[in-house]
Length: 176
Length: 159
View (cartoon, rainbow over the protein chains, first blue to last red):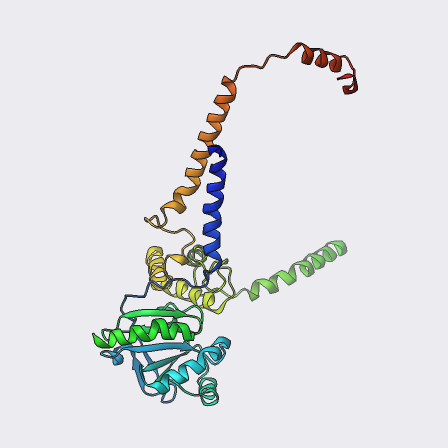
């Protein structure tokens, strides 16, 4: 075969390869620079007991999940049954961050759909959400005993992500 | 005099609405220089919700909050670099429409220049090769056919 004809073919194949891989990647999933960094500190009123606060510092020494949700968030409904069953299994504490929500609406939503959270805090102005780089609710953070963010799930939790990524990491981090 | 009064009345009536508009213009909370800085910064940052819009353009609630953050930090005396660093620390280099030059972005930055240089090299080689090619002499038959065509003859005469 003519070598000169091979050049456009190779260029085409390389380009097609890149585009093909791109088909399966979600452009909305932007890797967070916060993974591997300390979880930003916060102190927020609790959803059920507004006068009491909870912060990331209170969870030191524990491996925990922080789930960012809101009553106005449609895809939160999608992941909610998973969270409820996860909380029943009692493998890892889950803190809910009710993002830019009305407390009354948030409480009603939890009453209707089940409350998987060991504790819930309110981020009414979304400031803590910004500190955590939240841009698409729901998002879930896995934070280790030293308060370092180990994993971030953007968008709804899936059974696959939970079973193959998050839970193995939880088990691993519990050992340390 | 009557005419003057009429003209004056006309002018007053024409201008009066503008006076009303002027009165409506409430002074903004920021001075114009700071406001311009805020807009310029917001234009350089990509909104993560509508990824093809800047924070300045997007109507997403997050973009609105981030515009608020920018204004707040400018008012607090932060420099542009500090504000951009604040955003990058939270959302990564992805928010920058002008990504920093790093090992991972080198191809992105150098790519267009490499393509240009590569194209120029290929073009130069082809032009040089074509210049060097010897002119092809016509056979007697072809010459006769060309002459026939030039003289107004048609292809049909050709064998």
